[in-house]
Length: 230
Image 1 (cartoon, helix red, strand yellow):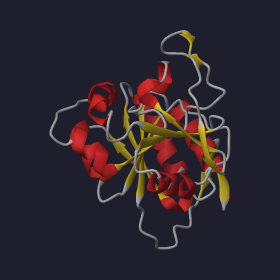
Image 2 (cartoon, rainbow, N blue to C red):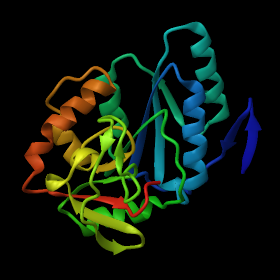
Image 3 (cartoon, rainbow, N blue to C red):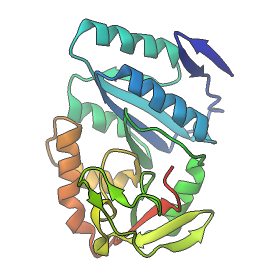
């Protein structure tokens, strides 16, 4: 069921009493409008939304921004909003007892349909894959962060529009497997990296993850993605 609330689309999610093996964290700072677009597009394109427990970890620097986030809390009652107070502790708490963790940021926009079950099953079928990237695909031949063209790696098709490639020999964004802007990981792998260390915000969290990627060169040299970025 969907209803309009303060200009946003609120979707009441039927979770069917099912345990959430996938937890999602959306990081947001002073961008309630972008966050609403991220959530709306995720709810529109994720075809088994009941399989994920979504959390928003946000920080705002002024009262108007706080008012906007409070409006979103009312608009999306099935999503848990947490104002940042102790970033590391809150992230670890949100991961909780999950099997998989989906990291998102507030300016993500989803443009293609997907099922979380397909992602998690692909991860199970390919234990050498470090994660499943939703931002990469054969169409992502330009790296925004590096401001340059990047070579598309040799994709191995695994079925259902899902591809696998060797990130250890890839170029640009394809060689950057651990990040916080729209990728799914096994929670156990992430906890192995971040559990013993301090991190204070999404940037330092990603720096910690990126720095640990070399530790997976031999055990998890593959990364999964869709043929076309979603």
